[in-house]
Each structure stands twice: as structure tokens, then as C-alpha cells.
Amino acid sequence: MTMIIGLTGGIGSGKTAAANYFSSAHDIHVVDADLKSRIVVEPGKPALQHIVDRFGAEILLEDGQLNRAALRQQVFSDPQQRVWLEQLLHPLIREEIISDLHSAASPYALLVSPLLVESGQHRLTSRVIVVDVPEELQLARTAIRDQVSEQQVRAIMQVQAQREARLRQAHDVIVNDRDLAHLHQQVDALHQQYLAMLQEKEI
Image (cartoon, rainbow, N blue to C red; front, side):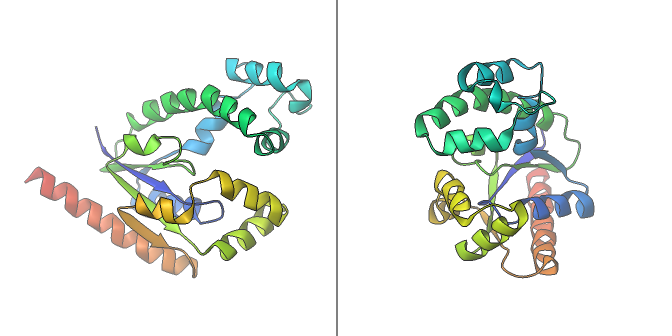
């Protein structure tokens, strides 16, 4: 199977921008754990019914889709509910991720996940990239992007690995405290590094 590299970072760090550039500039296969987490709770999927049974029909939007904002409010205010939800969804998300990774045709594949370390998904990878950003910048970017309060962003940050813990897991770090051009330069350099590593393995 293709070498798998994990890409993670806190909310608002720029994970998506980095992953999109790996894909668009270097044609790297990207598996997004957040997208997989949406697939497993689509209407008709058993996981969605389990969530409705536990939280009630008010957790659904009018079209039958999961109201993710409402669910987020429930689980971030109650740690026990969050644990229950993670135990339901993490194995299903993992299955979706592994299936997609097996289809990768690029020299290496990226597994992008905000909970790469916390969920144990990093065990699927050979290396871990952390997109790092100062916390105040993280707060400001997320509050503007998602139109949410600083308090809600801080609650999400509390659930995610603390910055220092995340950095301890990193083999490579992208510092995203400047503009997109700076981010892209770092991705280009890592891409060349990974291709060189793969060539060494073949020798």
C-alpha cells in the first residue's frame, strides 16, 4: 500500500488549505476524516438512527440530515454524551478511511483529521504533519470563518489535543502564521522530502 502521512492541527490552523495544495499542486490522494464523519451519519445510515434515538428528532434538520451544530452543542456541554458519540462513530469512520486509503494511486496519501492523535487514527500513518498556529490566531480565524463565539471555539479547542501534545506527535511541522504563499512553500518542501524518502526505500 502507498505510504500514508497524517495531517492534523487544531481548529482554524489551516489543515484544509495545506491538504488542498498537496492535492492540487502535487496530485496527492487526500482522505478527509471530517468528510468520512459526514458519510457515516447520512440519512438511512444506522448511525444516524442511533443518534436520533439518543438525542431526539430535534437533532435533525427539516430535510432529514443531521443538524451538526445542534449535536455539537449537546456533546460539547456533556462529556459523557461526547464519549458515547465517539464510541459509535470512530470505528465506522475508521472503516471508511481505510477503504479510501487502499484506493490511493499517488506515491503517498494524506489522511487529514483534526482528531488524528485523539482518535488513534495516527496509528494508520507512517509520519505525522502538524499544521501549527498560535492559539490567538486560531481563535480569531475560526470565529470569523464559522461565525461563532470565541467561547464555542475555546470549547472545541479543549476537546482537541493541546498544542504542545500535538507537536510532540509531529515528525514534520507546517507553521501557518503568515500568508498562503508561505504555507505553499512549506508543502512543496515536504512533498520533495517525501518523494526522496520513497526513492531511498526503493534503493
